Image 1 (tube, rainbow, N blue to C red):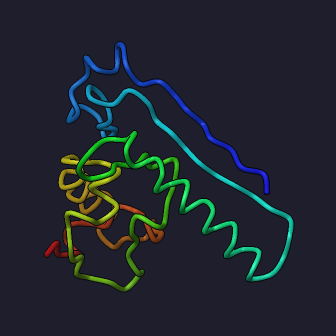
Image 2: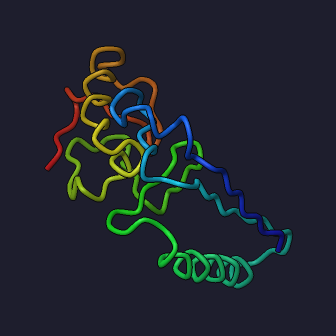
Length: 139
């Protein structure tokens, strides 16, 4: 297995910009952005499960070193483990756990409205795209 960790500093000038000024809200209280990723050439479900379990254990071991409360995420470090929506889904439950709040925090509601104005039919979509507010209901 080839595993990698990427650590990027966020402090400095970034902390002077309000969380709501841009879609990227991870600013004042965030010191680092960390990405973990792995690849392997071995094949088979047992091998895959072993590597996924190793990475899940590593992710869990980092809990005491990251922000308390809702664990946030960075959109460009896509992580389907934090949630997704199906293409035909119209109701999003557990809104405090949906990926949009982890990626965008309080900006998610505003981005839902913008997506509703720009792409009301949700033509541009994937399992973690911002859904248009007119097509989805947060419950």
